[in-house]
Image (cartoon, rainbow, N blue to C red; front, side, top):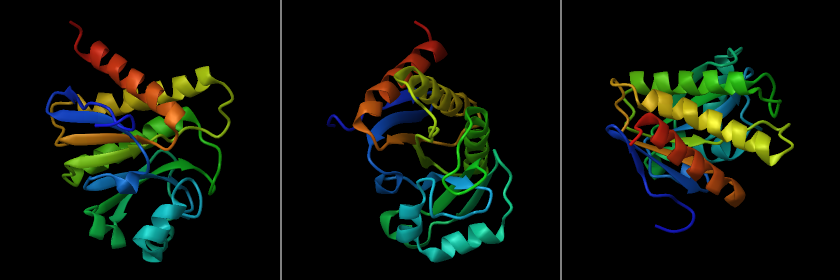
Length: 193
């Protein structure tokens, strides 16, 4: 283990850890990716996924549009099968490509994505930090990260969860410490000593 990843923390059967990087570089079965109501993957952190998975994934999501804010849809992972990733779970967090995100919508989209992962019997999942573009202070960023991790932990703690591994991924080294701290706080709150 190095400074770009954390020690996995157990939440019942599931293990949650944090890593620096991209969701598509994680050893998981499925990844959550931010989506917009139009299903266009050219922005919102999904452009790289479109390039790696193949354009047919975007055609599939666009064919399902308009998508509902706070919902999630699932598609095949296309060429990402070569990396061991079989599903993409598109969490609808904005109206337009690259559009602003609101925390309540992001939380509903994460919950929808986890419900979909449960129904599809996903055992390992990568979750990106889907923070808003309007965040202007470290306190706001910490609040977003804590709320997102709260949504992840709340789902994982449920008895019916099939997930064995959740990797929370951040692209930014400065965020990693906040993510790790928030995860440790969530663990302590979930199972106090």
